[in-house]
Amino acid sequence: MHPPDLGRALCIITGASRGFGRTIAQELSHVVKPGSAFVLVARSGDDLRTLQAELTDSEAGRAGLRVQYVEADLGLPEGLERVTTAAKEVATDLIDHVLLVNNAGSLGDISGFTKSFTDMAEVNSYLSLNVSSFLCLTAQILQAFPQRPGLRRSVVNISSLCALKPFSSWVLYCSGKAARDMIFRVLAEEEPDLRVLNYAPGPLDTDMQLEARSKSGDMLLRKSCNEMFSKGQLLSCEESCGKLMKLLMENTYTSGAHIDFYDI
Amino acid sequence: MCDFSSKTLGRCLCIITGASKGFGRSLAQQVPYILQAGSVVLLVARSGLLLEELKTDLENLTVHLGLVVNCVSADLGTAEGVAKTLEAVRQDAVNDYDHMLLINNAASLGAISQFCSFTDPAQVNAYISFNVSSALALTAGVLQALPQRPGRKRTVVNVSSVFAHKPLPRWVLYCTAKAARDMMFKVLAEEETDLKVLSYSPGPMDTEMQEEIFRQMGVRHELMPCQKSGAKLLNLVLDGDFPSGAHIDFFDL
Image (cartoon, rainbow over the protein chains, first blue to last red):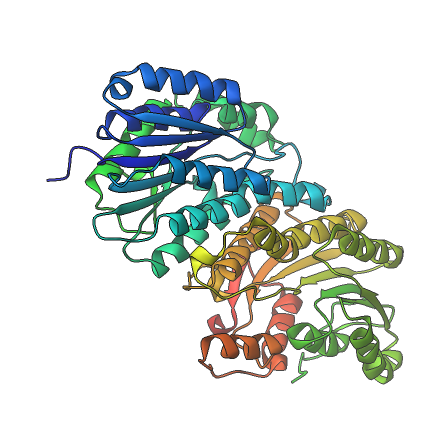
């Protein structure tokens, strides 16, 4: 019988201002015990403040959930440090679970094809946000909250089918997702006590999906994204997040595995 | 060692990165045997000195075969280095070729260290810039310089590794870069149907990279001479008998 909650958790959620990240923050608030603390990270301070207020006023907030936010661009080095510092500040000795959800990500320029990416600065900027910051934030958090008895540590990568399968006109996104999955597979091999999950949420009805169906350079891909939208085949963030919560609470997944919404 | 059964790529522009040492150098020594007169071999590495030495070593062979060898000393980890290389490619691209062959071989091991040590984005960014971004930017620039044209074949090789698919503790940088590259080249293969794209995993060879691996890991594998793996790669390229985007390991064949 799995525990009905994720404990007194310190949850760090990146890309929390909208889309899937926002939903993750909201859903997590229902399954953590009083005494938990959230660190919400995104570039938009306004959206983060709105979410912070919403969570603070919620049932969980009134029961004692503390919510901090960090307005930061994770593509820039200073951004990461501030997140780790905030996490350390908000943590207490009562915390029995550290949960990092690496959700922040971007599509990159999907209007062109691989042969258009001659600009190193553009490619580096993309990989800095989607790959380097992912690795470094995870390393910083694990260093800040080392293994100790009574502390559960879980790290989640919001992955994608694109980590496994190439899609025409999506070279940056596919490469970034493939890199992230591998980063976590190495981590899982190195740290058997750590819970490491690559979760592919399925096609979500978010701003990112809107971008995909309006800008993809590959016309067949754009068409199929539009069809998913018009046929109501996109998933709500809540539906996909529900499955993620279940995975985390049951806690039986193989560490390092890539699990897709449609697998469970 | 150089038995290609008189198969050739015809008049070819052949670009090899990381050509000053190891596998790249070995490929530079073997590829002349599969090129016809009028071909150009463009060698790229940071060390201009080592490249010039290599060019001199090859002189007798290449002059005899009617080949031109050009060298570009460039740090592919930087935008300037990639730009300088593409400038050289564009200059060489003006000629008529039957075939363009780009071998993305330049790479580094990176720090072999426990995961939690990778807290510095500057370090990770620098590694990714050289091992991932440069392969993308260079390949993109080369494909633009030599676009699809009837009668001209184009082959792009990604020197890969078994660790593109297999995680190894303490090797997060290397595994990640190889995984990213394999996917990058799979996407390219989806997009450009005239192009032959190959991710080739050469196996453990007698190179400085393997020396470094031994120093860090204390484990020595049985190493093969570079030429042995190089010959397999060049035969694959000559035959072209693989699905574009495939990952092929030396030990698969």
